[in-house]
Structure formats: structure tokens, C-alpha cells
Length: 592
Image 1 (tube, helix red, strand yellow):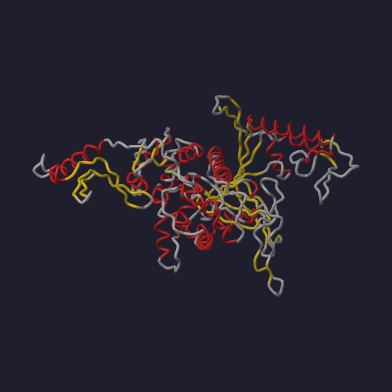
Image 2 (cartoon, rainbow, N blue to C red):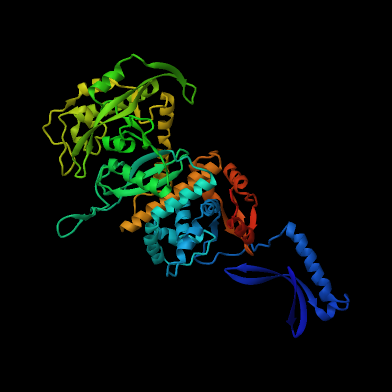
């Protein structure tokens, strides 16, 4: 508040006014009319000096407690959105800690573009983190945040090309920052693959040269969809560290086998991140002869210096000798354990070190040579796991019996899980329906075979020195990567993919990857006190409505918000905040 001297009816007039900013313009509001200067001079020797001092004293008094005057009859103007989100200040703080703004500013210096790469990338990250939607929708709702975004929708699509080109470099940059901020255990690398669908009727065509040599494989291809959809898919491999924080990702054609994606990813990460040795942890779907041998070599010498692996191993799909070893009850060690609900169950395990003969593929994809590798094989039996397998199979058998009695009700898609228990079943290629006239029966032999192995699971590893318990504990960490895929798909809604160009698809998955990294780092900073769903819910709800004179009203607070306050030294407890206070929160510069 300050003293204003103006002219009224040709005479000097004094009043107290308050300055504020609205819609980018400086405005004034009269707080109190004091009177004509000539009248005030009759009461005060120096009215201007006197009332300037009064204005200062009132300003000091009001600094501790401000009062807003609201017009209860005021109406909203047409097409106005006065509500904004401030929850994005938290992922923005982590974004800042990870040095992404500095990264893009350095890149921008060497480019001749009239839009800000960091502004576009940060908007797409905050939108994916809180309000996941298409790039077009992100642009249309950009005013939900307090940032000044000065770019067009066309600029966003142009920027995606740059983001795709920076993808590997950004992954490398994030690795370095995470190592500095919170440390990283890179010796264990958890790897898995999932896929994302496109709601389009066609696949990408492969590109060939004049001699019919493939130049480029189409990315969007029909393949084994995790959602059992017929749409074209693209696949994503994700590598995660021992703390559950993503390290790297790669995308590859939906028509390729996921088993082929592991080794190129590990080679790139070791080179870019300057890693010496990595132990890859993956499920049985990636347990191939090539993925085993190329990581650890023969592994007959513990000082060989190769990389390592911990893989799941299918018991039902193993050879006869391995199955006999599993069912032979000699050498099993029996333990009694409790689950998180306090229920007791039996657990038994045994292991052995043995040589295994494998066949490796040559450059042409055919089996080229045989090799003997040494590995530790561990098998365990869990009473709890046996009950689960039986329950799942009983459900599938009940469905199989219904299918046998009413085959016309089922197709290839709707009979998933049950068709394997039905003898003589076939499906029409065009429609996926079961043709008439088939004699269907229950596959009793398969049921009996599976029952023998209920509760058994096997893990194989190059790390022969590890105990059975250590092997099991390492393998258990795979649930973190499965959870990460759930976050990307369910929370960040990475599917279906709306962009079409290969570069734009790469940029889309890079944005999802960086959002996931920010979430996982945030979880670590919060010491995993809150779930991803709780974090996102609180950030989405921490929004405000505009009042008057650059003041905003907040209406949400919970324990998660309190955790943000203690972690980032924010004050998020105020019911009303000025725009200046909000800007201070958004200019977070604290270092961990």
C-alpha cells in the first residue's frame, strides 16, 4: 500500500492505493480516500509526509495478516478458467534436481529454432505425470499450470523429432545425475519387455533396397500382445537398477521376438554408462541359450570377468533329466515361513552346479555351434505357490469344460487360458471361431502332468557363489519392473499410442520413461512412505482457484502433502497464497 497524489476537480487529492498484477498488467485499487490536500493541510503540518508514514506502518501491519475484499455479486467472464494446479511443483523440483532444464538449455544454444525445448519437454512431462493425454490435449490444457508456455501445437510436434534424437543421451545424462543425487546400484540390472498397441488397422511396411535387402523394419507390427489384442504393437524393453529406478529403455518392432532385445540393450548401457560388470535379472521368457552364453561365457572360471545373469527357468518346459531332479525329494532343505498376513506355509529348496550344453545361433539366425556352460540351478517348492497354481488351473479347467459343451460361444480370443486343456481344438483363421463338427474333450494327460509340478519354480544363475536364499531374493526384485510397467500403462496411460512417426513414438516413450524416473526418484526421496497412486492423487488435488489481486485459494491437504513439505522445504499449508509466494515454490533450487 502507498500514498497516491492525483488531481480531482483541478485540485490535488490524496488516497491510499494498493498495486497488484492481473493478466500480466499492473493495476491499482483504491483502499481509502483521504481528501483534498488543501483541506488536510488545515489538520497536518505536512499531510504528504504524515500519510506516507501511515501507509508504511499499515503495510508493515498488513504483512503479517492481509485482508481481501471480495465482491460477492461478481460474475465469471465468458470462457475463463480460474483454477490452476500447483501439485506439479513437486515433479518440477525433481526435474530440476535431475538437471533436465540445464540439459535442454545447452542443446538450445546450438539450434536455430524459435521455440523453447525445455518448456515443451517439461509441459509434456508434467502433463504425463498428472493429467496423461495426447500431445494435442496437453497443449490445449497448458494453462492449468502457472508456467508461461509460448509455443504452438506445431512446435510440439517439431520438438518431438529433437527429443527422439536425444533419447539415448538423455538416458545417459539421467544416469549420471541419479548417481550424484541418491547413488545407484548398477551391478544388478532388472530387464523385462512389454508392448503397447495402436488403434490402427494396418501394420508398418518393411523398407527394402533395390536388391531386396531390408533397410528398415517396420515398427508397428502385429505380434504377441500382452493384452491379447489384434492391433499392431510396438515393444519396449526396460532396464532397472536394484533400487527400482529405471536405467534405460529401448523400443523395437512389434513383430520381433522379445528375446532378441536384451543383448543390444546391455551392450549400449555398458558403453554409455561406463559400467564394468552387470548381472542381468530377467524372467524365463528371456532365458535363451544366446542370452545366457553371451553374458557369462563358459563360466567355468569364477574369475572370468564376464557379465552375469539370474533367470527364471520353466520346470514344465525343461528336459527330462531336469524334471527328474526337481521331483527327486533328496537334498531338499525344508523351512517354515510366514507371509505378510501371518499365515504359515512350507518352503523347500535345493541347488546344484552343473555343466549344460547349449546351441548358439550364427549371424544367419540358424544354430551354428554347441557350447558347454556352467551354471547354478536352484529349485524351490512353495506350498502357497502350489495352492495358487491349482486354483488358477481349476478356473481354466472349468472354462475348458464350458467350451467343450458350448464351443459356439467361444473364439480364439475368449478361450485364452482354457484352450490348452482341450483336445482337438482348432480356430478359423479369418474369424477366430471354432469350426463346427470337432470332437472336443478334456486333456486329462496335460492336467496330470501339470499337477506333478505344482508349487515348483526354478532359477538359474551364473553366480555360483550365491546361496539359494540370495538367488531367490535377487529374483524377487523383478516385481519392481512389473510394477513400473503398470505405472507407465495405468497411471501414465502410455497406451494407446496416438503419434504415428517413428521419431514421435520414440519421443513418446522417452517422455513416459522420464516421468517414471521422476516418480521413482520421488519415491526414494519420500523413503517410500506413500504409493504411486497416493502421490499422484495428492499432486492432482493440490490445485487452487483465483480470488482477487493475485491471490489464490487452496482447498486440499493430506499426509502426502505434508511429506512434500518436509522433503522439499515447501510451505504448502497456507489456505491463501499470493502469486509471488507460488512463484517462490516453483523456483525450487535446493540440492540433495
